Image (cartoon, rainbow, N blue to C red):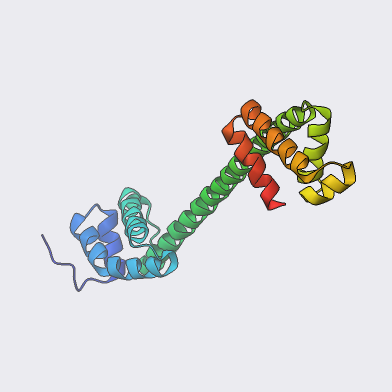
Length: 194
């Protein structure tokens, strides 16, 4: 195999067009490191840079018969490498847009599901509170909805503090048995947040 190390780019192009694998190998040796560094600075990813340069050389070999003679070899290779990098950027941008769209859809679905479940739980809790016996419900709501102390509730309803405490304790026991421990704890946590 002939050594083309000292052959000009223009001569390499003519040899490449005639199907010379040695000319192709020389073009690869001469420009591969430069093209790799060029595209790596743009992509900041070693594997993508390596793949981009490899694709440029594969395309060069495939299209060797149609290589434009008036174009400089280095200009052609750098332009092809730049186009490959831009293609990668476009692909990434589309991928990122799809990922962002998917995440947004997923987040919206999750938020919607959460809001529906939360609404259902609140309705269930409210239904069970409404089912409490009259005085027990009134004491419970004054305590947990209006935030009054046992002493304030006792004064408002003219009851003893002991009766108020018993009514609240009984209401919580009824709700815990009707709602289940998980929903009950969620309800209590919600009350604490207030």
